[in-house]
Length: 245
Image 1: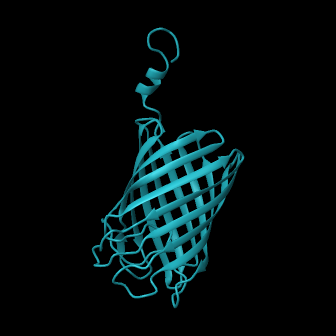
Image 2: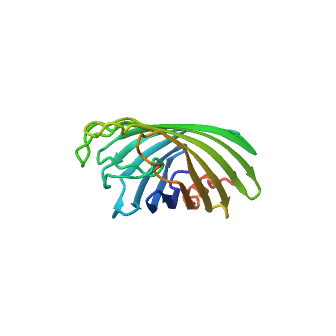
Image 3: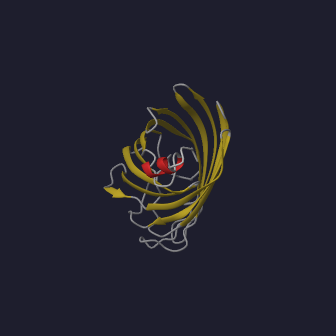
């Protein structure tokens, strides 16, 4: 993204679980600050089985693209969560609400052209008790991905490993490990619009005495990138001397 460009993504998920169905909706707005540097604000809300609808914690972040080549890319992310949402149950892959300001950091790397392989590592660490009086344990994610690009779009498969540490003030057994399989298909409609379909199933969950948080989840994402600002187009082309710069 170039400085002044914006990218908006809207996501909707339907989740089937042991207690019925749940839903999640989220929106993410990314702004280009300078070449290789962007900032993002993410908001979400959910209807969790038989509970009331609630907002999730907002997330504010900055991303630096340390490597941006045709066959490989490296990005480093850092930011904070903002306690705008209600605490309570959710799935491990949906926005997590702790009711506290939590720092988090992430790095991802992808390599390839028609075939792409890559991975991502993320850690979020609550530092104090949230609005519900509990301090949650840290949450670590490791994703391993493979994708195939063709003229119709990009098909991807991903193994997602998640580890949540035990918090302070909660019953024992809160810590858990979960492994999910995530499949997706991205189709770029044009230079500005893209849609992605998602399918996700849990493969492993080790919280004793607790059923799987969900059985299957399906999602749809719609993304739009604004056109390059006209001032940049003018600056990059002609500066009154008839030459491109």
